[in-house]
Length: 447
Ligand code: GLN
Image (tube, rainbow, N blue to C red; front, top):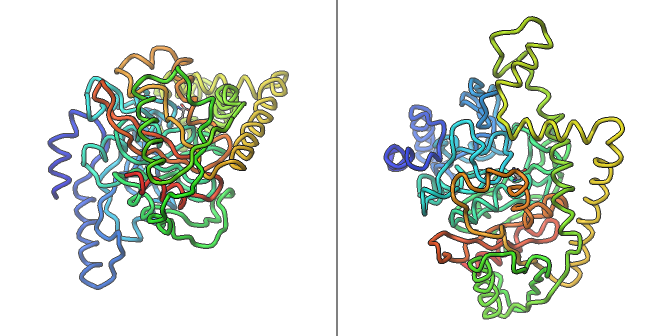
């Protein structure tokens, strides 16, 4: 009830939630009460949670912040959501995002931009901007986001919270609306690394309905939370520590380095030479996958359908012209182009090769260090209507987050102070495959 009251009062100013259903929330809360009364409570029973609008959730509008799915009520529930509901969590509502998770500012939402909690004239970052702002503004204790190229870490950084993108395959993608399937991964967003670890314990599961889900032994992601940092080797990629970063971002990195040194960690310089190539590689591959994934929105089975058309082809094209926003159309066109006969080898295949080189860079770096420290973005949260004016500028701002997705590695963002502009700045910890517990532990020691 407390959260619902706060949401009613504060959500209109920040536009973090785009769908609320008080009756459903209260019914779930009553069920959690019954579970507790029956002695069946888990650590998460009755804890409210907000879900990014990308996760199917039976009975809830699941629009992926697109006009295309504005009328779509999910008939089934994503595995990761179900895992949390089974543990007794209570859904508060659905959070704002860039349409189909394409964007870095949350301004590509059909429902309007979410606003930065520290300054309403600035963006939240994206695409999981709604999840970041509702946690930051304490309109939810925790939330889920998804990260295809930085969409958990970058808004977490811009809003002053903690967010984790797990190793690709650790969390099921079943029921999470697909953007770029070989990159997409769901993750927790919370005030602290400890809360992220607790959530991930319940989120992670093998799922035969996701062909890339990994069958692994159950793991306790909280196990390293109290592990001292003494002797830990922290890699500083020289390509990430450049004068292109704002003075505030440089100061936040310095804070983090000081904190790590004080606790006995050792800082070593490492190199990720293919850093520059990760942007073109990512935008070719992610757009290619998006163009095929989004071909399902044709107006036939569900979602938006144009009212006026003379024949079937026109029904498809009018539906898609009306239902998709301009960034989504841009990605579909780029993706279709790079996959087309005659361009496939020059673009798509080349980008796949670059993807391998980027992943190899990380493996070389992890021979010299345990964890990589990095910025999340070159600046704090930009002003509304600034970054989004130029798509290439927006793509370039993903420089520090997307290589992680190309490689499939786990990484998190944790708060590292406020800049001179009063906006929060986070730093990123990147680990090798399956080292979630280690980076969560390091983040916990730094918080
Ligand atoms: N900004 C990147 C993109 O637009 C990443 C988005 C994401 O991680 N979903 O593709």
